[in-house]
Length: 413
Image (cartoon, rainbow, N blue to C red; front, side, top):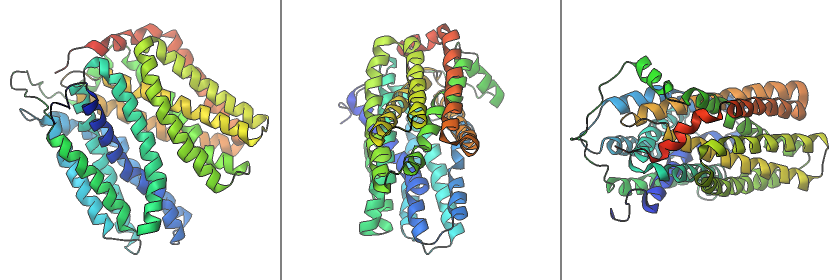
């Protein structure tokens, strides 16, 4: 088996894709799928809204990465962290499966919060391991597979698991998610991370020194701005797409197929297609082109809303937005891997992931403010303006990310 999982081969790529799906499913189901069940069981809108606070641990990746980076083993360092945290998450999912909606709501929230914490924490060593083991030339492909895996996780966690719950009850989705995790752990256990006895183990740096070292890299500050605004502007538009389609008269089932299954599949395919373009063009060209495409998708959706076009045209605009979201997310995950320094993969990934999550949380709040005051057209105009500013900044400083492009061939640990 280890021979099939050789560095940069499809075996390892698919293993990490499996892990990304397995880690995304619990959070997606708990925060996006389960609220429908809660509503059926009489939970109030406020209670469901407060339950979303279980996703807060994602903001703390920058801190959760520090013990992963600091407490090291001579061999199998990131693998040991990933296996331990994934195993704890699988056991917790089994525990949740034994509760049911009749359990005290505060207890259910605590379990969901713990599951979100473990999934967020496990994501750090999994990605650090991918950065360490995959050759630089394969990291863009790894980013595309991760992006596609997250779209697949959204389809399964937000749709398929609800069908599983409807047919087989409360226990089935959590048992299935635990089984997916345990299956990935079997392959992860057989994965050889390598021995670091001959390599110099970096001394533990103070928190600010670790962060400042990342930002001293060429292009890192510009990239931080892209993380805060590039993807979140597209993601916020996608978040409000479902109510937009509902308000335009589309039935709930149609919205689920268009914005759920259809958009997820288009986003996954766009993620894989974007990786081919990035390898052909390089990050220096792909970054402004993909962000420009995202800007056009936002403007196109705004024009569709302004012109009150028929539903088929509105669906086409929505699928264009899904395409842009898939392409930009592949770019984001690929550059995050390229800018992670050798022997500091966990810390650098955690910092970038926290910036990404911060933007993903703040931009939708601003978008909601625009929506309340200017309707969907005002919201899309605000998001388009924000994306325009990010795109212009990238065009003005395009050359500063050239080192990240050349980092695709950097030596690994």
